Image (tube, rainbow over all chains, first blue to last red; front, side, top):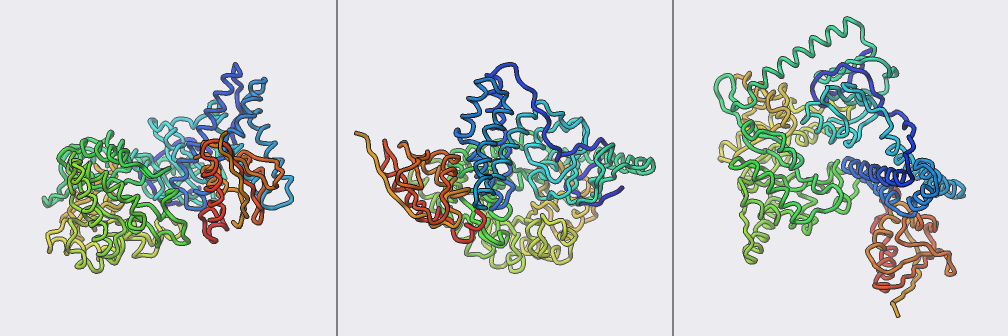
Length: 524
Length: 100
């Protein structure tokens, strides 16, 4: 049976299905009480780490609940009695379950709905730790397996060994999730939005993450066709590799700059600087995962990447929180977060937080070729307010005698107002088109909603026309224009982007080779 | 003699001292060195205000008169800060209380 979904990271995987949603395995008792106590403390830590990673991808309400779960898990009032029970001879799983069940019983006995509902939270907390406890004993996904389930947590992805292939097939999920980003940068095939149609969970399946489909219980004919497609993909990828270290040029010799997008400073460890023309987008949201980062933490993160890049440009985007990226203590809860206080709007509303990032950027700028851009700019006033803050902080650093440099300040083009009337932005240092958000705002189709995915395409004439408007304006005024959305790395979109006038693309590191190969095929 | 303080405050937040409000409450309590306790009646039982599990066990819905007492370093400031937080509805608007 073939089920269609949405490709989130291209590639092919043939292998056994591994059920992501299976109930926890049984816990295997340890040799001594001390080991049992260590196992429980580690399991609680693991559950907390997992929830913290989930907060990064959760919306406001969900993040609030996760934060509540973390606070409960970290409370000694829960772990204390369990650790004591282990001391008197109980295994860790029994001790934890008993401690939690007595709390749960107290809430279940309540005559108020609200307290009975808290029992569900405590059961969830109980099971998260039991799962973490049993994982040492749990059979991990076999090498090369296709992980199949509702959704997958970033920690699960990072804990999985992908060296022997395998892939991810999700009933829900999103191409914009953190896991999808990780899968693209590691080259792990991934399909999302498969829905609930599939019931079979045994045997081998075929995951076609180039077209976006999974085949359950395949026939011999299906297997043969699949292997041909997989081998053709591998050939194209192999051929593309030969392009990796070469500068990108089109069929007719037009040079195209290809930079990379990174989300974490450590991403650069896996990239050869020779293979790209710089960092076209360094996200900074990762710094804001759990708490607001201090100036020194930010400075070190920016400096690491600038020193890695040497003379090549590094474009750092100021924090783009809000939308689908809530930050506890920073973003606000809104009914329509994509149209709310996100990106530069939030930074200008929370100048105390923004100024810390500005100082870190000004100080880091002396260590390389830094450019800074602001996300979600809609009006020229926002740009002048942001640049004024840079000027103020620069003056303050100068007065204190701190080494610093003012980098060129550009803007993201993702709100349609900028692309429609670029003449209001003639003073910016550069434009960087954020094609993901530009497309979703032009087409009014969320990029994380499988039901409207067919509308969310950068190749719609309306989106391409706006891109062409910006590139033409940039050429006329001598303002550099680049593109750093997912479309830049999509071989199917690259011809249209070059025809729209773009000569500077920024792509996921794993897409460098295929992007350059696709560029070589275009006669522009 | 070490400092001590005690106060009573009316909980006006829609869901009371649970879930998200209790996260904020215990976090704030933990930021003080003083020993801090809460109760829903003047004669106790008293619960450790730095433990979210204990604070939830106090079962303090909207309309509860919450008793807060502290002793030790910063006791006065701790009680004042916690009373303020409850009076500010835990810094959550009405909209947010729904989903807290």
